[in-house]
Amino acid sequence: MRRRRLLALLGSLSLAGCTGGPGDPITSLAVNKDDTAHTVAARVVRDEQVVIEGTVTVDAEGVAELGTTPWRAGRYRVTARVDGEPALDETVRAEEWFNQLDVVVDADGSVELNRARAA
Image (cartoon, rainbow, N blue to C red; front, side, top):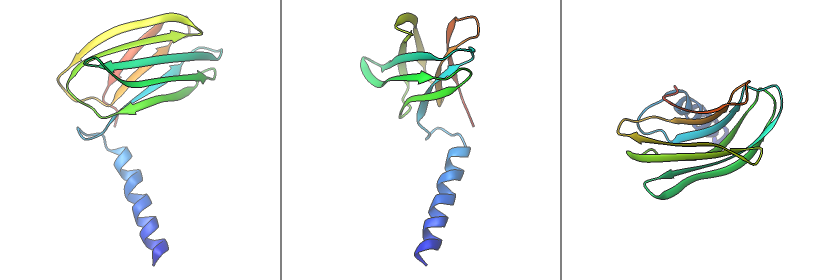
C-alpha cells in the first residue's frame, strides 16, 4: 500500500513538470552551444532582490541549472560572467508569466539571454 502511494505521488510530480503554467517557477539554465566547456556565473535580480545566483561549469554543448525562483511580475536584471569575463548585463520587464530565463553561450563565443515559456 505504501509503495502504491509513493508511485502515485512520483507519477503526479513528473506530470506537473511537463505542463507549463503560471504557477510554475522560473528555471535559469546555463546553455553551452560551444564545443569547449565554460564556467558560467550568473545573478538574477528581481526588483532589487537577488532571486537566483549560481556558478556552474558547463560541458561542451551541455546544459546546467543555475537555480529557480517563483515567478513574479517585475523587472529582472540578469548579469553573467563566462570564464571570469563579463558577458551579459540585460534587464527585462515582465508583466506576463514565463518560466525560462537562460544564459546561452553560442558557438561563436557570444552570450545572450533567452526568456521564454517552456512546456
